[in-house]
Image 1: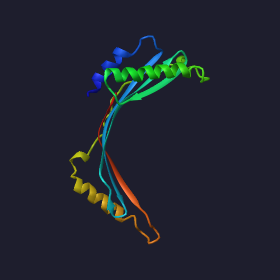
Image 2: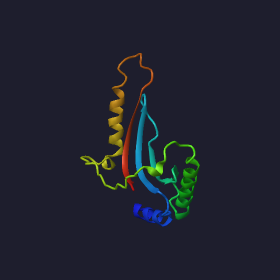
Image 3: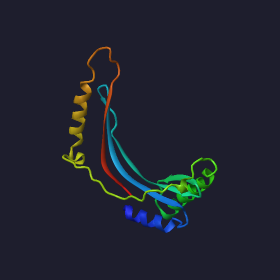
Image 4: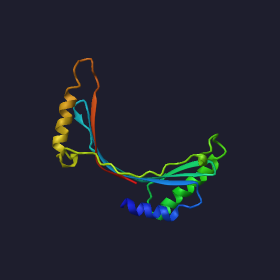
Length: 157
């Protein structure tokens, strides 16, 4: 789901009277390769997709997260963040609504020489096996492990 759709849904929901309301959307895919001693563990493919909503209102601050990015899922997260901000108000010595919150936006793209998505799994495992073999430098070492975590795709709002 494109981040622009999430942004549009959020703008429809966010009450204008709040002191501050923000959303952080994450869409991240990764691959995890691990070896324990001489054994390759199962390859894990992870997908982290969701949103965190931050609300500041009348001196209180509340956060809520959700992986349900539908309009109703975002509404539930926003309601929870607002409820927590109301409860928070009496628990803090800081009046968060008095703090000027930044409204920053920006983009950054890491320069990539070699795209990990184009490296065959067999080659990745070969590099991992070579590195793991170098860990057993003494007979007193009885347990060793290595891992390689690759971020395949990430975007945020």
